[in-house]
Image (cartoon, rainbow, N blue to C red):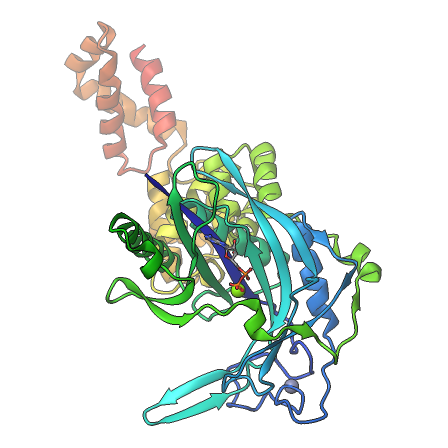
Length: 473
Ligand code: ADP
Ligand code: MG
Ligand code: ZN
């Protein structure tokens, strides 16, 4: 019996306006190589100047993961040659990163928790991009020098479920802190997965393989599965030491395999040394200001449970993204109940967000949704009618009350009108009324159905129910 051991390196691109060591803009969509200057092009004599905001954002992350924030932090030079790095080295932090020894709590669906230790988070500069265009290769340096925060976990995860929970929680935290756009598809939240196996009960760590090229949770789960299988088969066949090497492998989604990309360099191969062009970073003076951080996902979830009486499940769903949590609270500002708002946000609205629509681009915005909730709560419309209203609002620019009028969906709560319909239905079904009086309680459903039908669905079912019971009573 084997167990899987997994540690993650997450590179999250910090959302500063300018690069890490120069004042070039960080937007990549600009004309190729236009966001460059002597510093990020590595022209001789140009010197790096640290962007303070990067340090501020790193302190915020460190605070959020209960980490040690080093009072003085240093930069180091990691030497390697690659065409997209004009310096032929990367400025990073090896010996004294800005953040060390943190932890992140993950929550399983059954309510249990696990704490994953975080070894460190360090600041480093991103490389440019090689573009292979037929026989020609080009280099775009717009991205060179963009600030990254690399967050390195301890090898504490045992399943891909834990990996995905960890990544989602970390993703949610950097979004809550607003320190990164964390867009996986666009590469501003990238993850390398380190995988090894060991016989269950063994404390020792075996050879780790680093898998790159993973830009979705689905691929991460699949890549772990195929890599664990490869290592397990090698072990069982007695060729583990020959076949499982410490190396970097690429995940190929078409072939469903990982394959070797390069051998893993040791730290010595990189000729690390303290970066001579940068001063030590003194963090003391910034600490007080930037260790005050906004409410985090777990805190918000706990508040939603106590303040709005949401179930743990719903509170987790809604607070998983700051966007959804804010949308929910904006809905409530219209005065509706949290219970109805939860359903109409997490079930009805989400189901209607298709074709690239998101909460921020939804035709029915939070205010509109809040008003819809009000009309359900005050029984102006039934839940069934509300679905029609929402369908209409997703297609038409209208406020809720006009939509209800236009679709003629106002519930009849006028008891006089409902009483008349009840009398009529009872009169037409005297035999069943007798049976009901004789103890066949279930027949109430039949009567409610008939009255609802008579009202074309516009009667308030609760009111109908009460009146019928009184009349049949
Ligand atoms: P490198 O930059 O060389 O990849 P790092 O220290 O940045 O090294 O990252 C190493 C990552 O590998 C960490 O996330 C760590 O938890 C993980 N790791 C280390 N040993 C193992 C192992 N035996 N199995 C799985 N993951 C491991
Ligand atoms: Mg690494
Ligand atoms: Zn520049």
